[in-house]
Image (cartoon, rainbow, N blue to C red; front, side):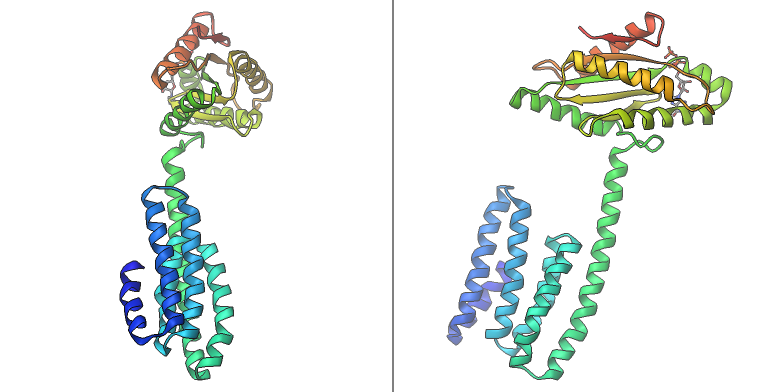
Length: 304
Ligand SMILES: Nc1nc2c(ncn2[C@@H]2O[C@H](COP(=O)(O)OP(=O)(O)OP(=O)(O)O)[C@@H](O)[C@H]2O)c(=O)[nH]1
């Protein structure tokens, strides 16, 4: 924007077109200030919104006060707005801009030119919208796949590490603690061997889905690997974690599908300590889980 506008501003100064000098100067100032804020990685969404809005208003003003050729800046401006906003927001802004622009253009140029402009602008906006929407959907799909377990739709290990790191930051900065519940199925190998891998998969899916129904929106379930899962319970202490683990164990026991073999789970609960790493937090919860196994399984143990 800065590269395109600087020579334009110079030409308009030489032409003494004061209104256009003002329009370009405002656009340039917004672009320059945005660059500074973007460099500092602050308020990025607001800045993109402000630039887009300024661009749209600038296109209306320049179509009114500029030369006839100014109206063709609408095309790169449209692309610019789509590159900064979500497809839906960009479309809404461009529809508003085109509606305001229509009477402005009718007043200053021939009807034929206006019709030609709109006949080319409308499909351009439609195709760019379609392309941007497709791109956004693919991006969202890839983002989900990157953090989700394929079989159970629980968070995967990557998501677990990211969220566990957030908990550590939350504890250091806001003194908000979190509890980790790890659990796995008891005698799962035997279940697989007796009923088949497919039934084992169904058990993993059912457990995740049942537990998801009992968790708060802020709590999240992850599959750490094989038949081992973890739940991060935000803003909680060891006692809260223990209560939730009891609730989950009871709930899964009574809600298991009759079509699947009966199974039990062992749990380990650990509250996050200050200055602790994710690895150490998981290790302590895992040790508690092994204690549950050693104590005969279908148990809940607390980490020290
Ligand atoms: N069906 C199914 N089985 C899995 C999956 N991932 C791991 N497993 C099986 O889970 C079983 C885990 O066995 P073990 O680690 O011996 O644990 P266990 O039999 O549950 O014994 P305990 O944990 O000591 O009670 C292995 O047989 C793995 O093949 C999966 O995605 N689907």
